[in-house]
Amino acid sequence: MRCFAHILNLKVNEDSKDSNDFISSICNAMRFVRSSPQTMAKFKECIEFTRISSNKLVSLDVSTRWNSIYIIQESAGKFEATYKQLKFEGV
Image (cartoon, rainbow, N blue to C red; front, top):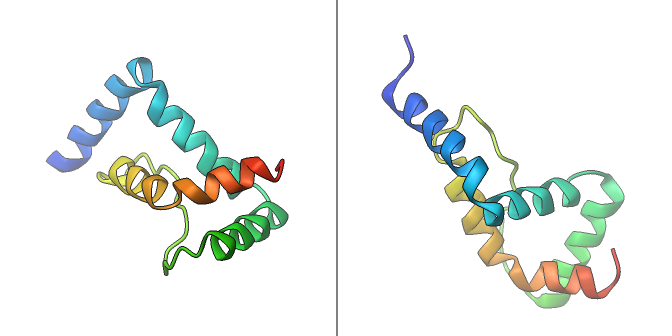
């Protein structure tokens, strides 16, 4: 038997996939950063350059985790300057 939070998460994810390009673009950016060790190393360099202090790095969307979209949005806001620096460096 599935829990209510899991069912609610599946429904929200289903509804947001079609209508929200913003969440999709954030998820794609997270996937890109975590796609290879070299990209992740460059991202860490950009974190140091932008002087962001955080113990956590970017996380991926997990369809069975009820709050993964919230966690992704939170880390995207925290690392916004880092993504801009990464784009500026042409990665």
